Image 1: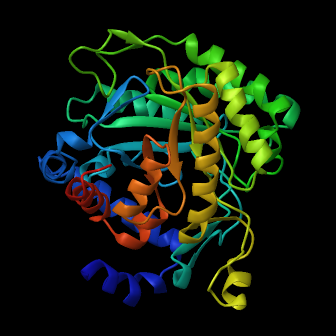
Image 2: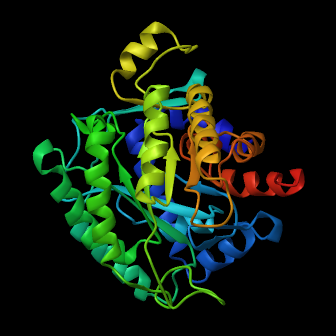
Length: 377
């Protein structure tokens, strides 16, 4: 494959964060060419009606989206949609702009098809991202891409003020989100994962839910309006959890999701574990601390998904939309067979990041086409 040869011979010699910015610049430049974005979208986006998914009160043209972290500042939504992703989750966005952790903070473990990041939620802040999303919504040339917005805690905000920080982000961003995700699972913001404990998570999610419910989104202005949809809608709220939670804590999150009427759970974020890697100890040491994503995460991410799905089936059988929280699988998804495995394990949608980095710009289109050939489920 041409991209793989380019990756092995050239891109691996470039600093990973610099390579990411180069890729983003190239995608955005290609997408602004007259007509290029829409032509690419017609050619590369999922078209097989058998791939379409109805979830969260939304219509997805396919099950595979790009995970938060790739487009932190909502600058490449249309470019990513044109490449064939069925939905794009932007962020993580924090209440205040922040530069993130010191560089270098992104490393490849090529022999494991993995990435280690300790970016630290570098982003332009909720106000700037909300303004960007508002401008995009007004553009007639914007593609009809489902847009999720992932929000997290500002690093300098103490834990005692975390709820207010999330509320501020929700107020600004919910009007432009097709769905909203509370991220309490990144390992790169000190103390953030402590918010996954149910006693902390319950008041946080309840507060963000109130803020999101205060927003009435006009379906006609939404990025994914369509025939038969209600003119206004409630913004779906999801939570993203870590693979490093104990099984009991995973089950407690499922119970809390049912208690609060949460719309969904994303399983999972990156892991702090380094077990089972084939990279040399030296390579792992050079990569340093941070969240590991990619192929080594697949086993635990699937285990967490199965725990959630089984628990939800026991307590809330799938008798209709809105009754059972939607599960979105992430972590270690590399090919169409991986997607099918997650769908059969109870996920409704899946997300990828690291496989896209290693697979190149044709990856999302290829995955959806292979899914269509496999018959999806």
